[in-house]
Length: 120
Figure 1 (cartoon, rainbow, N blue to C red):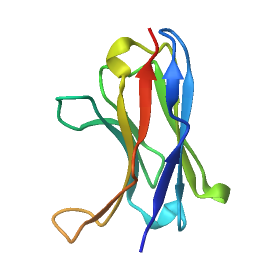
Figure 2 (figure 1 turned 120 degrees about the vertical axis):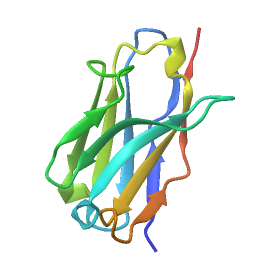
Figure 3 (figure 1 turned 60 degrees about the vertical axis):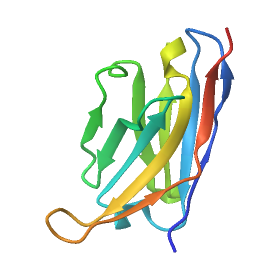
Figure 4 (figure 1 turned 30 degrees about the vertical axis):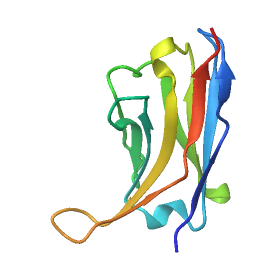
């Protein structure tokens, strides 16, 4: 069973930085895509950033230029570096991993989430 364990969340001041980590229980290259989602209170879960196996990245418009997704294959870990944080970045952040490519069979895995909160 695939496990994704997030860490790095916490309180942060506006304009501050934080780095989230997602440690996978197997090689990150076993997944077609890995990424970060977030869910703010009362809102739907949304994609923040994603990276496919080839290293191509995708960002939500709201975080482009402020957040960066990266990976360390030796540690089976994906990171989300968040900079110039805003109040609206407050949310529960989830790591996501997906195998398979639609329309073929797809499996998705989620971490338990790590909270990022604006401290103002």
